Length: 352
Ligand code: PMP
Image (spheres, rainbow, N blue to C red):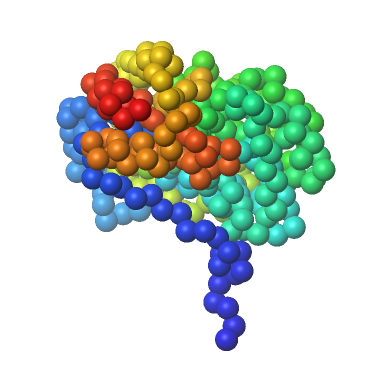
């Protein structure tokens, strides 16, 4: 019988995340603060007066303009998506195919490899250096050797929290010839975006999301920033009406509440630093320096699986990343509210 699916799909490992019962959720790098009721109400009221029987605008110009202004880029180079995953898929589909190669640093966000493999592309993985620094030289060499169609950089990197400096990003762009994707999903917790590079480099695409700092993972909203000429080409393949009216209105309202959201971010960053100190002082565990809203911690005694289960028994969910390359002794812990962080530290003290 002839196969129904492409061999690349049959070869892919299934991706799933088991959600154990929990009271404290520190496993998906979400914002721990729920949107206040007045903001939710405002979104719902706007939604109630919208036309549900009609498609959204073919080009939601008002929201594109607003997102572009908020993100600091031109509207003609701004693409809206149903989460940044949606735009990653679009970008990969537009660039990659069998016979093309893509360079990624490892460990990193698992979706890059999954999507690239699904498209039949050759994935060149470059291990991070000691202390989880990016091997910039290795990334450039791998891209040159394989004449890579794409290099994907994630900064701050999930799951290590590592930041890639501007000079390194420039060096990757200038030393390679393909598309350079810079995933800035966690940028709001870091010193700043590298979006200004878009004015100089038309092979650069930056992705950002409302799922992390903006506290709206359930909204599914993300965007890509690129040179207008590149964005125009991507737009040809983007599904019409990929962002629904709820998401469009929600994103608009959240951008207008940016000042309030900035307050949350400041607290999370402060908590991240406080947690780093507290975790560093614990026996049996070592946190890596992070510029995101999570800590990668290396366990020196107990196994990650054991600590994961014992935290889960206490209702605390973290991410066991021990199956990632180089992370066989690691857990990833999202920064929660001060109360949640305190509960985590207390539990770890009992367990370790
Ligand atoms: N990029 C990175 C690095 C991520 O960690 C995530 C979420 N885990 C995403 C993109 C996807 O975000 P979204 O919810 O916008 O699809």
